[in-house]
Image (tube, rainbow, N blue to C red):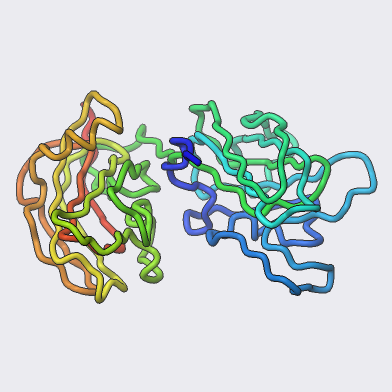
Length: 329
């Protein structure tokens, strides 16, 4: 099955990005927090707890009255949402027949009665043990989501795809920050391979937690090298570069280089070809296992908006920090 383009965006409903489930009308059979567990849902035959069959997701009890159940998810930071995945994996006779999603902006963990909710996913029929990939037509940044299930049942995971929103109205061109960070609106665009770890990981906050928390390609068995392209949260002048190979010991890249450009036209797809000819921001440098590598740009390119990462020939890196000052034209 061809996955929608929005699934290439960052899952905003990740605990490591600060997301948390703050309320559920009922989670008798399966705790609400499991809904945003980053691991894929599993089914454990024969596993029961005090309330019944253990399920890897959020599951309410069977409703015996009017109404429906719902759950509130607070994002770690306001985000612009482009699609969702309502995943009912392993829920077969106990999934909700339908669901909808509303969104609002609030400073509270649980929005109060004055919160204004907007429907971003209308009531949609669900199937058991299935992924429901639904596009969202909204350009507004939201802080909270309300998942409504009709009338009750269980959902394994909710993935919320989009871009973390940062207001640049108070920023200035004298403040240095990580222009590639997810929390600053950085966006992973494409990688030629993400077999062992996705590109978005290297833009995530904090240090990596293990070897799986980075971008890692499969072993290259042909000439050439692996590469990826990211978009900065805001065009800017990069001053400092940090390449972290934490936990990558027998599989770190031998070398790395960076190319960059200020892109003003074209599409994400066209950048794959164009990026081959971008000038070098960082000339080819060797890397070491499980270490932090601070670099200075080897060329002054002025403000850039996109960066191409070249690793030689393959392997994994944990984090990439591109610190600089935003440029306001």
